[in-house]
Image (cartoon, rainbow, N blue to C red):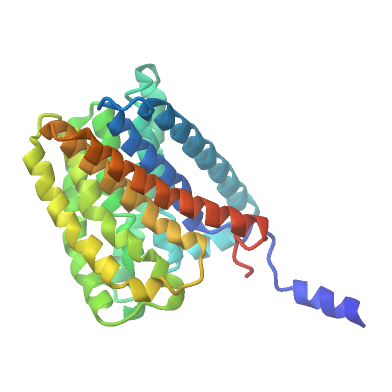
Length: 330
């Protein structure tokens, strides 16, 4: 009697490969973002910064490579499912985490391995192509009114805003400054256009429970824009970077004041949406401290705080994995 019931209960659970969620790419993105903060810190007289940055870079790249291979396998085994996710109003924009992670990796690898410029440029072009496809789909859905008002969360920033800004950082690292400025302008323009729509939704009331962890993405645009500007203009004075950080304070405060929205939400890997914004904000502060000649202790404290937040996310995620609860069940 029990065996048929057990079999029936598992009929609705899809294979684990089919249940891979695009939001998982937020994990390597956050780790690579934290690596960037430690790399900026290495320019100051902080002894442990360089080895820490190398370890984070290796870990982030390994995880990005693993997830990329799994997603290629998913595309081969479950192509129709991946197509549905591409057109989904929430999962579709989250797919942009993949190319954005690749672009961030390129921006960090290019200065370290100048001889690999051709391969890194190829990876950049492929990532920009995928990102552009996702961005066009997001814009089409918004422009034609296909997305319900309650499904306009901050994830819609991903293909256009971080995509454009991180893409600018990658192209700047490859010495393609003209194209980098073009992408920077596209990212800033997309931010200006989407900000009104997304803020209108956030001020209208709480997001659905499953989307509340994605509020962290709201903190990213200003911090990443400041980082992109510092990459494009190495002589940009610290005071200009501080203006960017001042702009970034608004979204940070807005997210923190919504603490009661997301702090009571059961932990899932979606909370990694906080990781890259936190890391980018820390890296921007470090760069401002370095250029302004201000006390390095401030930069170290900020990076350590970002590291603690991401370590907490990693620990909670590891516990989910050990309990078999990392992937959605359907």
